[in-house]
View 1: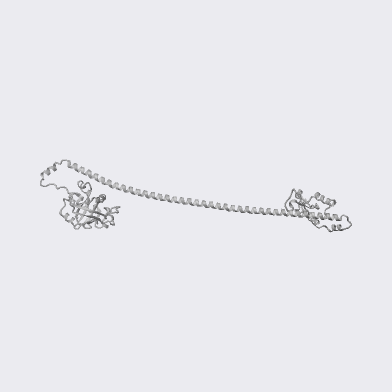
View 2: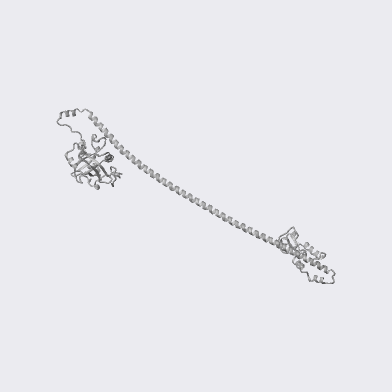
Length: 422
C-alpha cells in the first residue's frame, strides 16, 4: 500500500530517475521517454512497446509491477494486525480507505486486463485478416501466374501452329511449282514434238513440191525439144509410111482386177478397194496372169534397188514397160492411196506380190519418163510381171527376216483409216 506522505516513496521515485532505469522485459534503456513506471512503487519500468497489448504513446498507461500487484490484491499481515489493533484510533477509517483503494485498484486492473484483452483480440483479428489478405493475395498471385502460363502456352501453341501452317504452305507451293514445271516441261516436249512433226511434214511437202517442179521443168524441156524443127525426123517419117510410130500407153477404161493390198509387216496395214487397169500396150499373158490374182494381195515392201530389173538400170522404164495401172476405186480411198504413194516415193521403195506363175512388182510413177508420171495431175502406181526367182537371185529378199522388208515409220493405223485389229 502506498502512502503519499511517506519519505520512502519519494526516494523510490527519485532513485531510478537519477541512476537511469532499464526495462524489466528487454533489459535495455532504450528510449527513456517511452518508459512506463509502476503506478505503485515508481521503481520498476517497462517500455510502452514492451507492454502486452496495443502500443499507446500519447495516452496515460496504468501499470503495476508484479510485487505491487500482489500487495494491492492481498494486504500484508502487518496491515491487518495494525487494523485489528484497538490502540490505533484511525484503524477503522484506514481499513475502509484501504478496502476502497483495493476495490478501485481491482477495478483498474480488471479494466486494464479487459482493455489489454480487447486490444489483444483486435491485434489477433488484424493478424488473422492480414493472413487472410496475404493468403488471398498469394492465391491470386498463383492464379495470375497460372493464367500467365496458360496464356504463354496458348501463344506458343499458336506460334507453333502458325509455323506448321507456313511450312505446309511452303511445301504445298513447292509441290505446285514442281507440278507446274513438269507441266511446262511436258508442254515444251509436246510442242517440240509437234514442231518436229510439222517440220517433217513441211519437208515431205517440200520434197514433193520440189519433185513436182522438177517434173514440170522436165516437161517444159521436152516440149521445147519437140518444138525445135527436126528435118531429119520429118523426112524419115515421110519416107517410112509403112512403119508408123505406136501411140503412148494408156490404161484401159474397164478394170481387170479389183481388191486390196495386205502388207505382211503389221505396220503396213491394208489399202482397200484398189483397181487394176491393163495397159493398152500390154500383151495377152498379162491379162491371163492378172485374172489369176486373188482379191487380197499379200505384199512386201522392199527397197527399190533390190527388185529393180537389170534392163531398167541401163535404159530405164518407159510406158511400154507398164503391164498394169493401179488407182483407188473411190474418193474415200484416195487419201490413203496418196499417202502410200508418197511414202514409197520418199523412201524409194517397191511392192512385191507373189502371183501364181510370176512375181508382180509395183513401182511409183516417178520412175517413168516425165510425160508419163501423172494421171489427172497425180502420181500413181504401175506394175510389171517378172518370172519367179530363187532367194539367191533375189539377194535374200524372199523372207522378211533375211531381206530387210521395210516397215513404215510411225505408222500405227492401217492405210485407209482402218484399225489394225479390225
